[in-house]
Image 1 (spheres, rainbow, N blue to C red):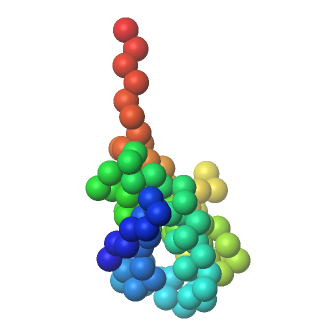
Image 2: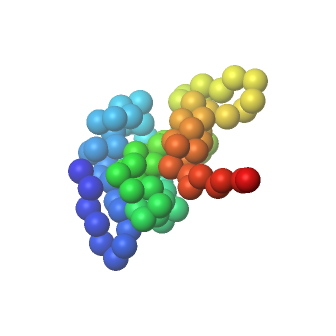
Length: 101
């Protein structure tokens, strides 16, 4: 599922659509482009074992925000997609904790 190269983690198209089948109708080139873009924003050193989940979650959010993702937006009052909310929650779970005394 995961390929590493030049310090970047990459999730395959097949792994992504297996987890998010709702995006199987989106153009493969779009999905792969969003996966590449997401992999550039997710540092394996920071995200650790959650890096693949971060990439998939961010890519899903990016696709849902594109014209091809109109049917997957599922927003409520705050204009955030379900995918964006999931990514933000995941991001908070891996964010370094800052202690204030």
